[in-house]
Length: 133
Image (cartoon, rainbow, N blue to C red):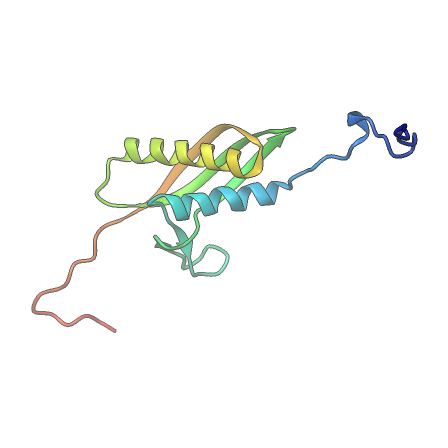
């Protein structure tokens, strides 16, 4: 009994296969979501065209990506709770974003630049005074 050979039209060379291309925006959203969900960083919320926005630890940080083939350079702008050792916090954030973005997208992250745009001190209750509403 012989096995029929594959027809020439069905056998494809590896080079003839398609490719998966991720848009820059997908990488930006992935990086900002990782920063928010898996670290202590926050972003800005509210406002219109950047006017009136406020620091919000539950908001997604801003991220931008420069993509060259399968290698990405990220710029992430975050806010952090205060007090916190900034050098350790940014190193932890950089490491986590690099690992997870590479794991989730398959794109190699070469560099992550982090800008800390605001610090949020702990909320303190005013004693003997009523808060303005």
